[in-house]
Structure formats: C-alpha cells, structure tokens
Length: 284
Image 1 (cartoon, rainbow, N blue to C red):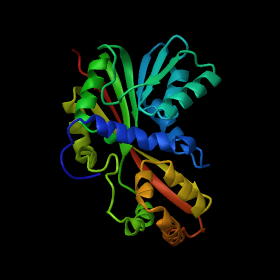
Image 2 (image 1 turned 30 degrees about the horizontal axis):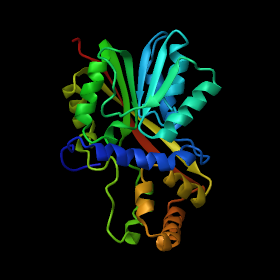
Image 3 (image 1 turned 120 degrees about the vertical axis):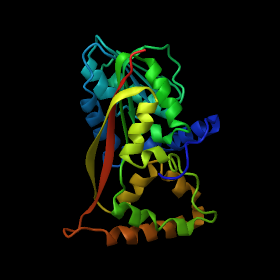
C-alpha cells in the first residue's frame, strides 16, 4: 500500500476494480468466515446515523454498510447504495428487499464520481473502497460536495497487515511468470500512515478528522477455507495471474505456509487491523 502519489483518474482503472469484484461476487463473504459484514456494521455504528438521515454508501458490495445503515435511519430516512459491479448491485438489492428495507435504493454507480446533486446526503459511507480508487483525493472531494453542511464521512481502510497473512501470501509470487500484477489499491501512499490519511481527508474538504483502530480476528477452519477466502478478496488478481497448470502447486505452497503460522492451540487466526476514519464536511 505504499509508493508514489495517487494515479490520475482513468476509467479503465475503475472498470478493472469492478471486474475483480464482479468475479468475486458469487463467494463474497460466503466462505464461512465473515469479514466485510462485521466491519460494515461496526463502521455504521461508529458513524451514528440518525433516524431520517439520507445516506450514500459508495462501493456497497453485498450491503455490508447499506443494510445496517438502513436499519439505523429507519423508513423515514433513505439509503442510496452504488457499486460498479452489476452482481454486487443485484445482491444488495435482493438482500434489502428480503429484509423489507424499502427505503434502500441500489444502483450501478462509480465510487470515483457519484452522480448526485450537491448537498444530497447527511452521511457518506465508504467501507474498504476509497484506497481502491485511481484518485482518492478527488473522490473524497466529491463526497464533500455531496454532503450537506455539517454532513459526515465515515470510511474504512487497512492498517498494518498481520505478518502471518504476509507469510502466506509471500509464497505466491514464485508462481507468477510476469511478477506481481497491478493489485487494486496497492501503491496508494496516503493510506500508509494515519498522519498522511488525515491530511488526505482534511485536504478534500473535511474537518474534525478522527481515525480509530479496529481489529477483527478471522479464524479459519483449515487451509482450504483460508484459500477459498482469498479468492473473494481483491487479492484474487494475484491468484488469477497464476497459470492454471501451476495453481495446484501455488495452493500447496500456501497451505504449507498456513500450517507454519498455526498458533499454540493449533488454530489458524489472522488479525486484521482496520482504520475507521470519521470527519465532517466543512460548511459551504
């Protein structure tokens, strides 16, 4: 997640990220190890939306933030959820309908350029998405314009990575004929420290920037579940880059590394450190 300034906005970048998650949609948070859903609930809790609020959820995925936000604002409020991956849009719409959350609108949309009038929302939620965008500063600036004066932003991004996770994934590059592919979100230097992240958000038109550490322990039943879980993350671009004939060997190498990081109780656990950033739009 280090190196260089943010790249210039390019539609192909957005399409590439959307394609990764479109292919991951079938198993997204369905491998028996919940990841996005609990983080989404906790982000909404930290944002404290009020009943009647109008909320925008950018990069909604399977509704990890959308659904708890809809429950918080109640039927007198409204939640608009957008995602660039059609399968994610369909799934979130299905889940909202199944729960009777008729004040949720789910539609295709670009988290870089949400197409809404200024001052349309009281809260913008961005769960694990802004660091994936080609120009995070420009996206955050647009979110500030979409908020009413005093409106709030609540976003999440990754903090330091658990060395156990890196030990496993570091086994994979040896099976890539052309080296590591361009992983969505890698190289976005503003997300490398809390200080640079705070500057990024403040520079985009926000005040009162607050960043909190949140930890989530993922417990895998075995290497197979961990491997399946990898496929439903953005890191699947690395797995897709492994030639099919080498994939069994890559999996075996990852399994060996997973066995090496079992704890003293024989469990496979990875701790994810996530940063919750909250801020208030400056009066305009």
